[in-house]
Amino acid sequence: MPVQSVVIRDPAFHSRLLLQQYLYLLKRYPILTKSFTSGILSALGNLLSQVLEKRAKAKRGCQAKDIDTFGIARFAVYGVCVTGPISHYFYQLLELLVPSSAPCCMVKRLLLDRLVFAPAFLLLFFVVMNILEGNKWPALQAKLRVSYWPALIMNWKVWTPFQFININFVPVQDQILESCDDFCKEQVATFLLSWCCCSRGPKRTFWNRTPLGHPPDKNPLRTSK
Image (cartoon, rainbow, N blue to C red; front, side):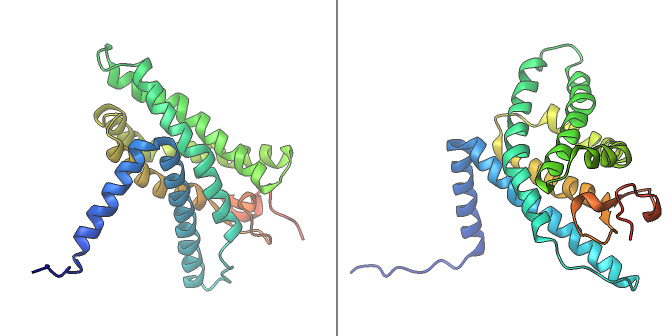
């Protein structure tokens, strides 16, 4: 007698199936898969920061603005076009420049990541976001003066221990662990960068956000009425 098919309702089975499919895409299309994953996570991280900011303002009795959908789109574009491809090639290059057999390889990798890659990548973040906003060079200069150094210090404080583990103990070829690291990094780093530039100006754009440690009346990008 033919056996009747039974619909599988176990959530764990579907989760494993999705995981296997994702692993297959990582192996077949690594850069493309990482790029779109990074774009989705960057957008979610920016959305999370806006929601938390909105709730914080509501608790203080301040007027909360609507979610900036264009800001979410900008972070998604940045994740797809910049974060995903550059991170992929950087970790590959780091493995070639400082192999595990090199003396003091752990310290050298960490120094390259923290003192070379992190500052350059953060600068690229500000430049790309300024372009996506349609702003000119003076706006970028003003934003860098007040936001770049605090954001870099925050990056060093938060991510140095995690990056030491990531670049020294996570194999480059182990795509799923690297993707899990990218997941955490995208969520937290995007939230920190967005929160570091909380919107306080009359126009809600990324570059009118006041950086951490600077009161609104001292923000050089604040539009005067």
